[in-house]
Length: 392
View 1 (tube, rainbow, N blue to C red):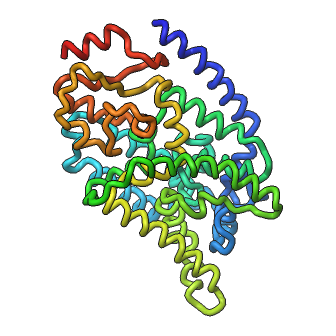
View 2 (view 1 turned 180 degrees about the vertical axis):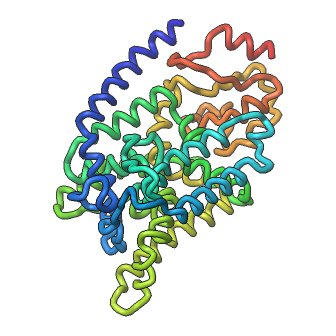
View 3 (view 1 turned 120 degrees about the vertical axis):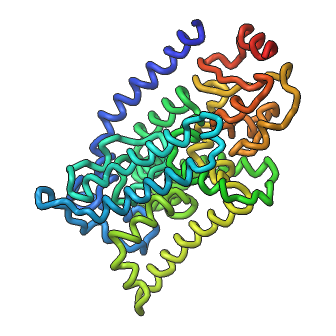
């Protein structure tokens, strides 16, 4: 009870901050997320925030409503929805254990693509109708229905503007759920779990490599400010280089639809820069596929994701956590064998605990109840919870 009361002391101010941030930054977010003539015609399309030379067909996109429905995007994207659902659910450990995160992450993926209604002419759904999602969601995709906190943060810093809204979203998410978001809602986490099904896991990098994502997080704050100080820079460094979520959920759909004509033109003389940019974006996607194959489908989440790094800072304080109890643990290894993040919570090291995505597998698999869910802000297990763990 006391823990729940203490929670409100943190969540209420964070929630109020988010409300204020939405009021202050919504118009700015609308301009950042524009795509063609519909959302904010006077603003540049988001693809112009990518590497200079990226083919830009998004700014010229024309949307008309009331003149019929286009079936092609509906059929194409709904087919992808069905394929992803099948790949995630078929012979899934989570389905066998009764853990529904395979479904919640898929549902978040669908909601994050509600722009399908706009593209197909069904309804004029704006791209930032849902504000900023608490997970990676690249606005380079025509179907995107909400912003990405990492993209919005960089864009704000490039304009020497305090990133009030993205920080409010990240802070509230970290306090309330921590990296539970990574396991249960993140669409790229859904894709990563699908890749993990086919991963050979031949290589296990040293734990110290997990520090890289915190380095990336720091650079996301520093590099845009340096670029702003030099003047003239408008491209987002992380989105344009390291982000595989942007490659698969942003650029791949963009190149396959709106920019398809421009991609074909890149292979004609005089388009060397654009062709190199296309090659670079392709190389980022293929590199992720290779790393997922040899290391883990969650390789980006473990070693490079700045969103995961930020949320991991709240691993001891978020309201939703999985805790480990030494007394009932018999070191059977069930938890380590099926952990998508390849960690063991019996290890108290910061890099181990902060990588927990609260998937719940170890809770369901543990035969002695040495792993349990814990809700509330207290960073200590209660006497009752400990006794329950020992009794189990």
